[in-house]
Image 1 (cartoon, helix red, strand yellow):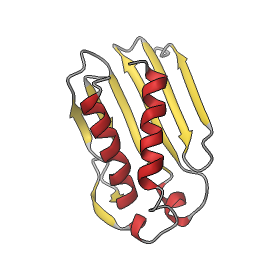
Image 2 (image 1 turned 120 degrees about the vertical axis):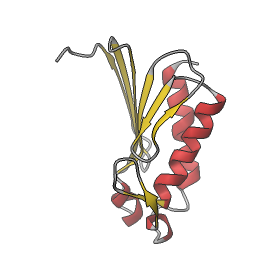
Image 3 (image 1 turned 90 degrees about the vertical axis):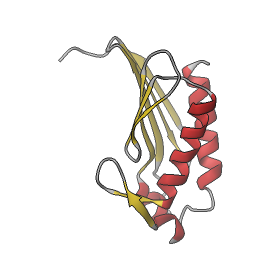
Length: 134
């Protein structure tokens, strides 16, 4: 499956699944501590669950690194996806229309693609290119 197509499908799933949690106290309930040692809110968990299910059914990568779940291995042959299921959780829970699904893909450090969709407005940014050596 092509990266942009997969990202659009994941974004649609996340957008639909969190719609009823945006601008609600329920969306802001802490459900656990994330892999990054910050509280995972219900809206984050619901969004991430959609992505995890999608990647299980459509193995686009060998490894997922997510703010909430940490490292998750999949049946894909190669590549790593970096995920923030709701980038701007506070804004989403507060009803401020600036929160996004952020996904990046890297393979062997040679190429990179990034996808960001503002889940409030639908505006989408796709970036492809080489990773600069450090």
